[in-house]
Length: 245
Ligand code: URA
Image (tube, rainbow, N blue to C red; front, side, top):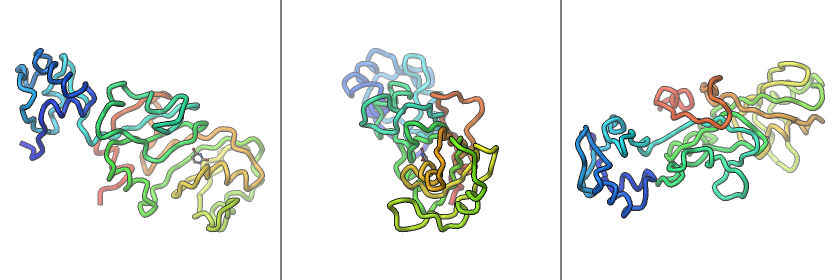
């Protein structure tokens, strides 16, 4: 037995299956089974064991991931990392039920509406803060396509730790840059200042036409994860983002 238990009706309603009243009715209808047996008492305490998902079925389907859910999304262009703005939101790309979960799922940092690539999301507030904390200094790699050819001095300037962005009073931490072609490069940031990559290239007289994040820590966006799709992260993948303390 794991130490953590939760009432069945609370577990299901927290996972977005319906209001307390609705999930109580689902249980009484016999739609919820544990190890093949119908559960009939919505007040029954359920042991939140790691293998619960396979053992507890709702309408013959495995239970959704338990709280402590972290996932990666291949963010497409044109969707916003926000709970409240109008227009298409990244949360709209997740299963409908996941949008009703408590605790809620939030993005770990943000990508601009017009940026694509690897976006992490979690319902674990402590994890979120550890990953975005400046103390963790987790590197994030971006592939940049530019409107004009590189001048040739950008890598040295970005690596210098002396580049000051417009309207700011502290220079950027050093940013390693690798040139891929005359008009494309990767840059790896450990900070996340507002529109940082776009503003860095604006500071050297260029313009970012396309921006794609392909790596966070040592976790790569998988080549077989299409834009708009997500995947739940296991402990091993999470350890690539944030090595265990
Ligand atoms: N820098 C930007 O300018 N935009 C992003 O989405 C991420 C980093």
